[in-house]
Image (cartoon, rainbow, N blue to C red; front, side, top):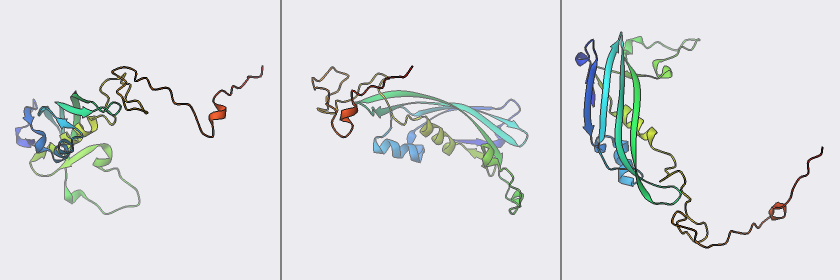
Length: 183
């Protein structure tokens, strides 16, 4: 998804697009591995505004992904509604100066993204926002009980009847140890 700088007028520029995950290399890789299967295309709404030499792009990406629960291993679908705000600044190679004794903050250090030419390619930034919104440990629901560590039964469907594992090992003797507080 590209934004032409000439298209950004005083009131800003609003765009709405629906893009397939296949247009984003990392998302395509996640889909292919089955780690995050994109059930719907990415619906992207952006508004771009010019502030002097900076371009501020705000928007929302919505999609639905199929994930695997990290506790019970069941697949489930999750809606993603990802708001974002990005600031871009034109990269000027003539402004680069050799290292000096004092360190000056660069645009990247302040969270400002650079671009060259007369258009901004949002593909990489949108892809990054979607990847960051994916849960690290996906859960089908907050109260998921997972699988029994002994027989592998899904504990969400009911108790499996396995007895609670008896504590064994070096620290088994400390299981019932209680400390009395001095008054």
